[in-house]
Image (cartoon, rainbow, N blue to C red; front, top):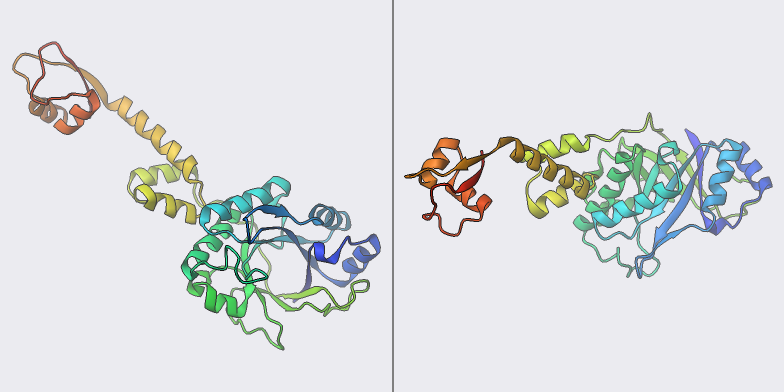
Length: 310
C-alpha cells in the first residue's frame, strides 16, 4: 500500500517547509482542481490549485486531481472535465482524475436533488470524458453515498476512491483503488496540525486509457444505426464520453459525400412516370419528390431535369 494525501485551498498556502515534509512522508498527492457551485452552477478553480500543481512538479511528487461536481447532466460533467484540460495535463495525472460525488453543505444544492439515475449518468460522463482525453478517471464518494445515491451496479468496473472514517473500509469491491480513512492527519505530517485528509492506495493506474473510438469510427457506426436517432443518439454518445456535435458533423459530411457520389441527373422523357424512374434507379418516388421539391408527383414534363440520389 502507498500513502496519499489530498489537499485544497482549505490547507491554505502550503510552504516549502511543508512540502518538504510531504515529500518525505507520503507517496503522492491528489489536488483539488476546483468545483461547481451548488447554487448557481458556476465553475471555480481552487484558489491554491496552480500553486499546488507547481509544487508537486517542483518536488517530483506523483499527483492526481479531483473536482467537486454539481453537474446535473452529462453535458455539464463534460464541461467540468474540459475546464480541467484547459489548465492542466490530464494525461500527466498518474494518480487519476476523480469525480468528487457528494452532497453540498446544506444538502439542497443543484446536484443534491437529482435522482440516483440522473446522478449516475452525470458522474459516469465525467469519468468517460477523462478517459476520452487520454487520462485515468475514477469516482470519489463515501460508502453510503455510493450505496444510496448512485446506481452502484454501474460503477463495478470503475476505480473507486472511498471515504470511510472507520477502522476498516466498508467498500470491499475489487475496484477499490484508494481508501480515505481520516481527515485528521493520520500520517502525522509536521506542519498540518490535525486537519489533513489521509489515504491508503491499494491499486495504481497503468498507462492512461486511450479514447475507445475515433470520430470516423463513431460516424460510420451512427450511419449503421448503432447509436440510435435524435435525442437517443445525443444521450448515448454524450454518456459514453464523446462529443455529440463533432460526431454528428462528420455524419452529415459522410451523408453528403455519399449522396454526391450516388447522384445523377435524369432528363424526363415523354411517357415517364416518377414510379418508373424510381424503379429504374433503385430509389423511391417519395425521395425523388423531396430531393427535387416537386409539388405534385403526378405532374412531370419532358425535358425536366431531376436529381436522382440512388
